[in-house]
Image 1 (cartoon, chains in turn red, green):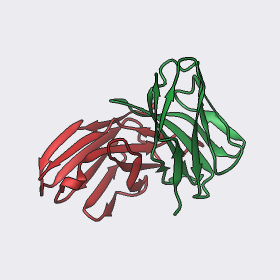
Image 2: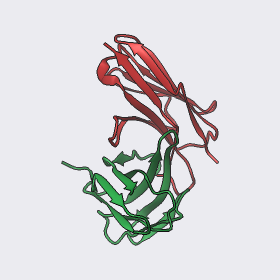
Image 3: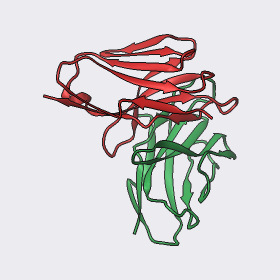
Image 4: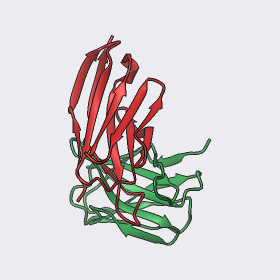
Length: 114
Length: 113
């Protein structure tokens, strides 16, 4: 059974700092990995999608890497801002013909101080 | 604008009552999903459907039921058999192919009173 772990569970940093969020998964047979952002009481917003054949994806100040063989992904946030404060979730897609099913980590709660 | 609409935003259920959560999408996606989110436990899959008139149980289907009569709609019923229904419920959709991206609605918070 696929298990996804995110470290750290919570992170508090001053504005402007570069930071890294970590995600690990136990079964390397994934189709893709997706990073999401969730604001309190809201739904999930997709940030980056990395296909299993890719090593990284970039969007603005965000960069996500994937090392499928070691079961790890990192989300790098450059020059953090208070507006980046949210919960960040990673999820992997596995499961034969049920390829849309996602297994989620428990998330990293990020707080960026002004 | 294309997207996923969940309603209501807040829902209150009395003990022994069935309630239905609505999920509608206009993204022309074949696949739809229901997840449950509890504090500190991440999201867990309840049910999913890859085509109309077909759906499969996820990891925590007991006490829930779904239907998929239209491509755009995937309602979730929380039955009285669900012993701990208080949670945040999220609906998602995607294209039915390998490697596709999932999109989520804004969620429904269900509370038992």
